[in-house]
Image (cartoon, rainbow, N blue to C red; front, side, top):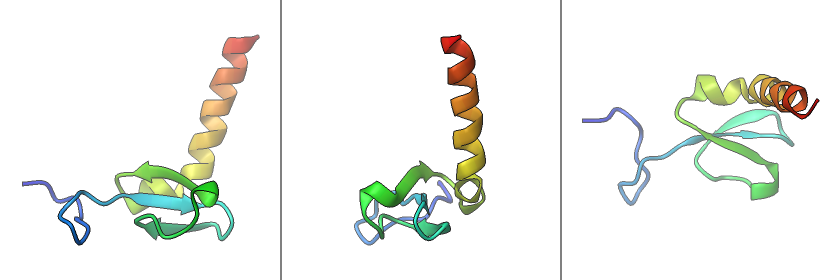
Length: 64
């Protein structure tokens, strides 16, 4: 059995990083324009900005 949290409907819930508040959120609490994710843990969501920067760097290098 998975240890991933479930929402009220029994679906796996995810963690999101809110770009406006710079906080990790459990579930889709804020508007999509402010959310990055989903992530399967709060720890991964907390590192969202690092993950985005890393991926952007890789994509930029591929474009060169």
